[in-house]
Length: 223
Image (cartoon, rainbow, N blue to C red; front, side, top):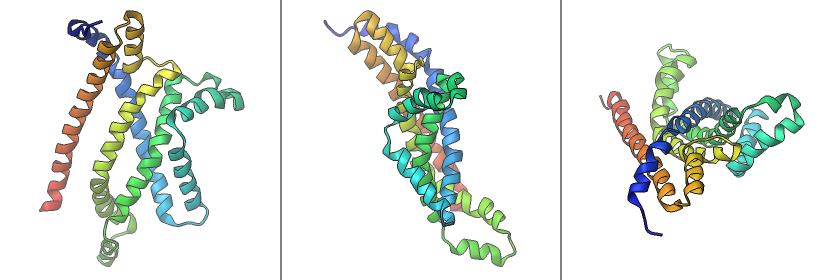
């Protein structure tokens, strides 16, 4: 069977139609992952006995477990332990799974970003009469966010590609649609290549946007 470019171009619109589902999974999961990751990072930096150790355990657990296993535990396993979760939808389970997984990586990224800011800036802020909360939100967090942005962007790229695992829960997104088209037509190479190209172009666009965002955000610090 020869490569059929016309067939690949023919199936592209049908695959792209499910791009919003992939983006929804990625963006919503990333939002919750950022919130959870920041909380975990602050707990880790607090050095409060017990809480700091629990945060470390959280990071180790979700980093060490395959994403697919986490998704299956959440969607298929938890409802057996907690019957009230039987009404949980596949989309909700996927977002929870991706959020928990990526937050374990973001927690360490944010922690490194916070620790990269010179500690003398806190003392300088206190010396001029600023409150600790003001120093964190006006001085430390903006610098930490900029330092953490490249690694955070890479995490989002990884998450976007990982959303292809959502098909195992019955969610029809980019990869799932491609899989169904390939199975029906038996044109696996052309179909999966089309899926791969959509992901590739999506990542290129995001990487381009992140690059210019980093340049724009770093301008105030250069003055």
